[in-house]
Length: 182
Image: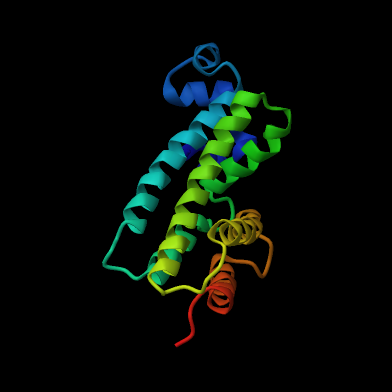
């Protein structure tokens, strides 16, 4: 992740990474087989850390559902252009077209965890009367699509779609479509 943050994926070679970690590129390939496998395993590691953060945020019963939903969105959206986690996601998505079924299943498992957590949060908010009645699964799918689209724009640095603008758009969307009006 440090190499991706520093140089981007275009600067990540097996030989260069091997030098940084004190291994030969052959040694790295022994453990990871391919650069695609290395990238996916790095993404799984990064997502494991984010998953722990997400779990801690979403389990905070001292926050109303709307507050936890805001925390979820803030964790989801990249910090800015070339965010290393999102740069890695973009590369894994790009390479997944040619990936084997196992790699695609592992990628789907990562995506599924984000989705399940969001569905559960929305369902909780509905049951507590904090959110409007919606189909939690359908709403979560649509909200994640909105987040993915905006997050790609942030990660690649499209003008006018910085993190603050994106968070404002998403907040407005959630207020208009999900939050109960007082």
